[in-house]
Length: 409
Image 1 (cartoon, rainbow, N blue to C red):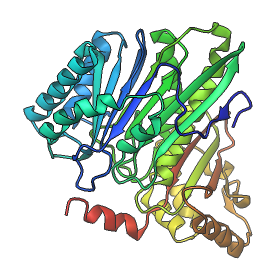
Image 2: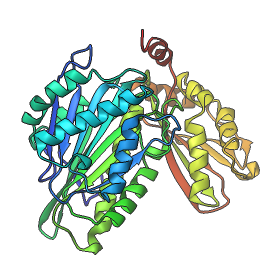
Image 3: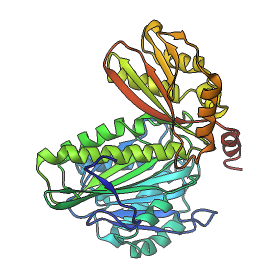
């Protein structure tokens, strides 16, 4: 953690002025929490990033339109879990509109300042009567201290809640950032991730806020992969509200948001369906950063690399092959490759290495607590420029197949 920011472990900690709620409304058969609400103060500014899939839930279109029409002026976000409300025809749009209309009346907020996000099984409509009937209960639970309940209510197949709160001091003023996310499967976003929501109690103008969030998303949710599948409902919403700070302190805010988004992105991959290990790919020495990003993403998305890691098999050829499939030209005769501290290739040539030590290193990462301390490193240096990037993936296990072969049955 950078010295400018510190973690706050108190689960009720959240930015000033923001209210949260998370309840059980009977939408899920599991009877877990399934309905969440975030309410922001007046004059809040929101940036949104959404799935780039051609098949998308209608709530995504509604969110994009309201953000555009209101120039980011958003006051509330309603989230339901268990039902993606995607591929449900006109009914999906009607349900999203109805839910936000009813919530608008309860909150006394303009309906076009309310966004809705849904997550769960595709093709299944929301049990809208249950949702509508529970909105008064949801609103009654709104509190600055209910951040943890909201974070729990957005989960689906996740094994753990994914949330983080940090703080810093700028000119004697405490500044807070709190964010939550959900995601475990269908993780290969090209914009954000499954669902992610960030709140910050510093006022920042829309154009600059968009730049800050775009940069943070590019270095976090855009460089993770569980299974190479992009969801119909991927959404990342970031809301700021509060007293403005001098522009010279904006880099500190950028630093905090970058950290929070990377923390959540890695938490999603750690919690990948059936995952036992988080692995980090560091690519250096490309002509530019984008080339490095493309190579790193090709490696984390390779099923062959993922299965090799699951089997603690130092099959370096799969890593090089995945790099070669990234659409980036490079000279193999300049490439260095490491697994952890162990060098495997030097200038494109296999060098003598202790295979048993490498296997032991990989097994150690698999045997550690996947949700706490596990990161296996792959370092690839192309030695032809100053470009660099990192990305995160997880192993493929038999459990992943089991989960996704029985998802709706």
